Amino acid sequence: MAGHSAFKNIMHKKGRADAARAKTFSKLGREITVAAKMGIPDPAMNPRLRLAVQAARAENMPKDNIERAIKKAAGGDADNYEEIRYEGYGPGGVAVIAEALTDNRNRTGGAVRAVFTKYGGNLGATGSVSHMFSHIGEITFPAGAGTADAVLEAAIEAGADDVVSDADGHVIATTFENLGSVAATLEEVLGAPTSVKSVWKPSLTTQLDEEKATSIMKMIAALEDDDDVQSVYANFEVSDEVLKKLTAA
Image (cartoon, rainbow, N blue to C red; front, side):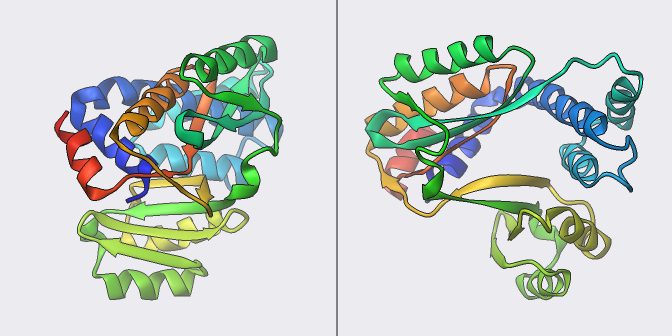
């Protein structure tokens, strides 16, 4: 099983969902404001803003919050944020990518470096590990959105590249460039998605034992807890046996 997906499931089961949701709303709001400020503050005319709004809606972010984030950019009082991608290695030689939106490069860089150091990792230069990942779009739907065959057919019609369906739901992959249009088309057929986002999908993975998996999970949690870090990706996997132990811990 892919380690980062397993990690997400474990953390939610441990009761962090409410706190995580508040932080998620804050980060989604920042992305909406940045997208609106960089282009026209209208989702219909601004692809990046449209994608940010789709992602926010998928997380059930209140409509008022979304509109407020857009208006903040339109009002000209939004901070100037810089997009930075940090790359390096964590425990067990796991490749890690952390994407950030920051108004203070020194603050964020220092905080990210401190997390890597604390957990025995090494922060490298941009591009040092991203060659082991593919930057793609990912859209997820609940299992009730349709049968595997129905979702596959809808995904093909929408121009998606791949679909994985199981008891937990449907995960649809597409190119990063087509993410917004594919998500919009699928929503018309399947209803509201669970999530709409760009992701770094590992093409090479590292198998970890329980000890190293626990360490990298703590490192990812520490990175995601930083207000400036928007998302974190890692290329580790754990066996079903290790996953059971981590879930029960």
